[in-house]
Length: 447
Image 1: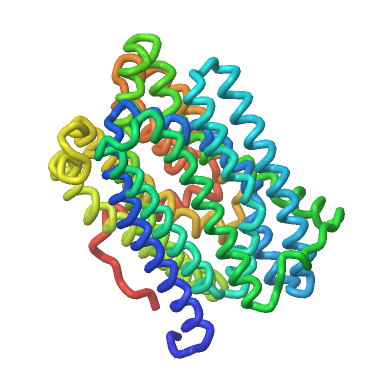
Image 2: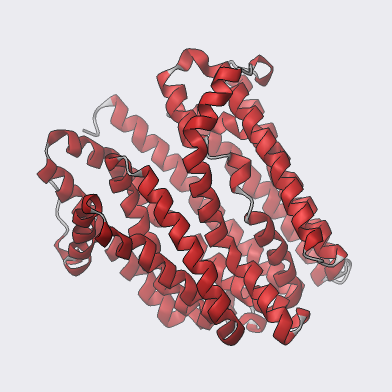
């Protein structure tokens, strides 16, 4: 199979994406650690609170159309300029709505002027999101290398800029609170570099953004197709970012604002390190997804066998990463972020448990996609975020960040596993996940 041109193309794409993710992982951890050391837990928490608040609205920047756009560009390459222009318009309107909601929301919450400014600056970076349709076009062409190069350039440039500002704060040349605005502008820098890079590689591919056209019919089609993914994306972003917002808001009432920001800082350090490992199951799932899809067309037995093997791999990957992380969490945090963030070690150890649900949930995407259960996936995401918010409300006031992590774990347990019990089409997948967990060492090459 690897000898075919299509297989070589897929492998090349995966290789470029893997290299980009590894580079991003290393640089993000390095810059994150040095920025945290320079700012301290309180200011680092305030910065992450602002980005977390904007993150609640991030789905509006994509408007749920990315996967739909790739699909339609594959099916109708002759409509490239019409599809890209219409998608860019939708994303542009979504980005404007994102900025408005984030800005107005921050003001209605009565935040201090610095936090409002941080939120407005971070949100404004999303106004460049429409040019991200270039990435979807290259992905539809199975040409990941130009996009990966642009993204690698972006992470290198932004990392150098962040390291320079962190050094200035550490050296006492820039006040920490003043530097917060500079770090917020880094998000604008990142999206600016991405936009310029995307337009350059698009031009080198023989196309130009000025050729894009807007079609009412295409806009209506994309919106009609993408609304479930928009709601799904909003649920995922809220579930990913609401913890930081709720920790600060709920603890301010009992501990005061400075202590609440400090708690957000500790939580953000642990969250950043655990999220850095999130690319591993994604790479595995992306690699195995085509073989699972082909197996479904051959026989149900082969299809379920390959799903089972994937779940075994996902659980094995969890053990390989989570067990050492659980045992060495505090020394790792102290080594990377310094003694001020030692309390984040206990949070990271607990976060290691979340990797189990992250890995299994990522593997479950293959089942959801092949069975066409997108509305079910939307339902589970909405239930999960509702549970997460409710449990956060109950646990954070007493248990602080630990309560937020348990809220996430419980909500994932329900949305990824428990809900499968109540629907006939998903019970077999639940059985495969359970079997994969208890027989993870039996992985074999499917025939």
